[in-house]
Amino acid sequence: MTSSPSPPGYLAPVSHHPSGVVPRTPPRRLAALLRCCHPEPALAVTVFVTALAVAAGHRVAGAAAVGTAVLAGQLSVGWCNDAADARRDTVCGRTDKPVAEGRLPARAVAVAAWTALVLCVPLSLLSGPGAAAAHLTGVAAGWGYNMRLKHTPLSPLPYAVGFASLPVFVTLGLPRPVWPVWWVVAAGALLGMGAHLVNVLPDIEDDLATGVRGLPQRLGRTACRWLAPSVMLAAVGVVVAGPPGPAGTGGLCLAVVAGAVAVAGTATAAGRGSRWPFRAAMVVAGLAVVRLLGSGAELV
Ligand SMILES: CC(C)=CCC/C(C)=C/CC/C(C)=C/COP(=O)(O)OP(=O)(O)O
Image 1 (cartoon, rainbow, N blue to C red):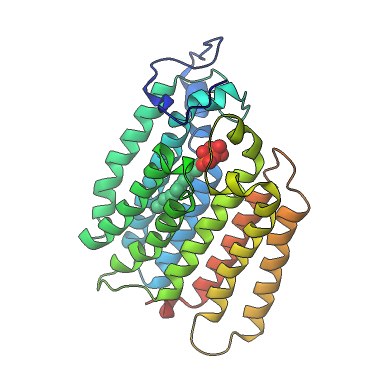
Image 2: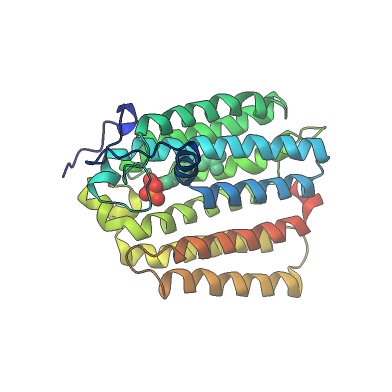
């Protein structure tokens, strides 16, 4: 077992699994590759941001450009993460990581990450240079997390930057580019930090054993179980209270439901290996986006 936070395992040319077993059939390798991209959050982020783009006033082509750029960015960050973590995931015997199971060489995942990153640049530029700069800053933050910052107390920072960049990408990409209102950006940053806390929860012991010491690992499981729903709730509070005028019954109901889901996700099902905190966080993020969709015209 190694306690070194680096170097990234993506440089290795073959599978890290002791057996070195790599399936030869292309469909199986493709399925394994897709599992490496963190498909659940990648899909959720893409759907949420595309919906936000429609609510903010993008036409079909504009929303499609936003959606494909976000998908490319999320794929690149997700694959980069599994490539960089290959050695540690193998040491921990992670059964949810195809590279650690010997189903795919780390190098293939690294190539996919770089390919998606390269594609992300022109796809982001379809929304204009300012919007592209915002989105690529967020994607760079994700790579920064994977390569270095996840080992430091600053680990929530790239999540905050990455998720805050998304509404900026959407509104700077409008036919008449404009900055989003502050509370949408703040909500994005809070949702990102909440996502970080719930994503780390299931593997906190494995992370500590392999020398990964980001902020959640330093705080410990118990603190994260309470901090995660608090941060997610703060995000919902911002989207409910942010728009001018009273929140209304709908807003208050949404806040109550989101609060119940966020607390249930970590308070009752946060055992080792549980994915429920993360799924609960995605439901909370979805509710926040639903609220944002209702205030589409007020995003700018
Ligand atoms: C534009 C935008 C939204 C950018 C994203 C910002 C960002 C920091 C993303 C991190 C994504 C990721 C794959 C985390 C896995 O973390 P992990 O290695 O701690 O978890 P794991 O063990 O489950 O792979």
